[in-house]
Image 1 (cartoon, rainbow, N blue to C red):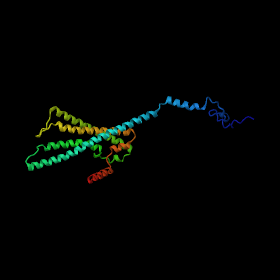
Image 2 (cartoon, rainbow, N blue to C red):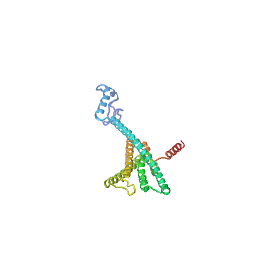
Image 3 (cartoon, rainbow, N blue to C red):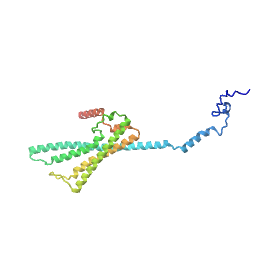
Amino acid sequence: MPPDPGCRPRHDRGPRHRSRPPGRQHHLPRHGPPWLGSPLRRALRRGVQPDHRADLRRAVRRVSSLLVGASLLRRGAAGLSALMGYLAGWSYVAAALFITFDILARNFLGFSSSATVEITGYILACGIAWALAHALAARAHIRVDVLVSRFPMKLRAPLHLFALSLLGGFALFCAWAAWSLVDESLLFDAHDNSALRIAMVIPQGIWLAGLVMFVIMVAALLLESLAALLAGEPARLDTLLASRSFEDETAEALDAVGMARE
């Protein structure tokens, strides 16, 4: 009795979906041992696709080395700027003592330096310039970050980097303008109008040194911040550039009280 055309076997689903009968699938001929497939696939993968893991490891090592070097550079610049900041602070103390002595000498001893305004003006300008780098390293500059502090870390870190870049451009412009002034004073051999006849290149050169140190501090922070961003450490960048929190202010106040008691 011929088979019914409407009743096909389970393994025969029409000409488009025709497959071998289940009984014959277990007896297919094998060409070579089965373990040749895996080495061949690995060899083809190595030959066709580049080895990205080694390149990635080398890139990670480069970024890590850059981050360590930038951190050392920033710490060295911060140490030098701290020394300059202390000198700037003590120069203000010296200016206050000089003004006090000049007033007492004029009233009780009958003489005066006749250059109080000029000398204290130079001290004020040089002290501000010499304290800029230390204020940046200590995150003591006034910042309005009510909105930025509420952003997520991934968005806050690039904004800190952008703000530091703008500050670096301004610092570079100030240093360039100061150098132009020093160069002009050297060209014309400029002196002040006081009785001391101080060469203007002396206070202007001291002022220029503070601005140059400010540029160096910004550059060191920029380098470390970029390295931290490339290394995927936005929290480290936020620690470097974010404004100080009330916890930092409280810790500094407690340290100052402890130092005063000692």
